[in-house]
Image (cartoon, rainbow, N blue to C red; front, side, top):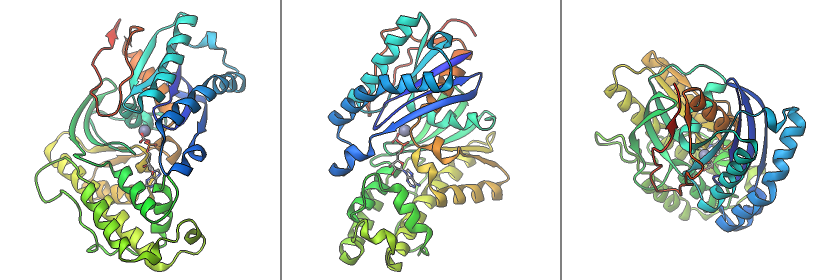
Length: 350
Ligand code: KG4
Ligand code: ZN
């Protein structure tokens, strides 16, 4: 079965083809250059860029892969959460294709697709704990299967990725700054006492990163020499690298503490799937790997290109759901960030 996946939830337009769980080909157009001037994603601009690129990208995918659209069995599309205008472009394009080709369509939960992405590289034994750490979300899930995610914890304010991007912005680094903080942190030594492990002194599985973000911003404000922006990247001062290492460590420790707590509560789970754009972070990967090794469990984490937004994960999630017999009626809605995703898939056959 061939599934065409479409991703347009934020500032990446992407399409991919997955056949029987294996990635055939994928294309991606990032809008980073368009938004960098504004220090963040401008929703109106993002929708226009998706609309400008999506058709041409689909042509490139078809030509390069040699797969005709008439060979596609099912279309999967990120239906949310995300920027509504951006989602509408991908969803409308997917619905048009499904109509024209006379094939089923599946609206995929973007966050679930992040967690399932690692299935393209290795088998996911269920039940597993999903630790989804992205630009807009930080969630802990109990995952029983592609169609069964239960939220155990979520961020009460900022997502971990937002904290990375905000700290980068205060330092004068371009958006999205998570990757740059990661690079600077790799050259520094963390002081584990410098910043708090926020919202860990309790029994909760929820997160709260806004206090950490403010603590780091206050620390930087007192040291304006750290804010040299991109010019600092070539030869960064040691104090900047050390500060980034301390901040990165605080985020990594917080994620580890919450994941350990969730595992302590779920006695039948010893697998953690780390996913989302922030899962590309070197230190977070290392801290979580060490944690799972010490516990005698296993960490599954996709290669970095599958962590950040991509369509391979959407095609893969769509393929798995199609294998379970799911489909959507053509009137399913795109869902903006902050709104619940309806349980409105139809099951034709198992
Ligand atoms: O999952 P994603 O691509 O988009 C959303 O669905 O939000 O995540 C994007 C986030 C951004 O905040 C970006 O700064 C962060 O992932 N990110 C990183 C790294 N690479 C991307 N954060 C820390 N370290 C990285 N290496
Ligand atoms: Zn994402």
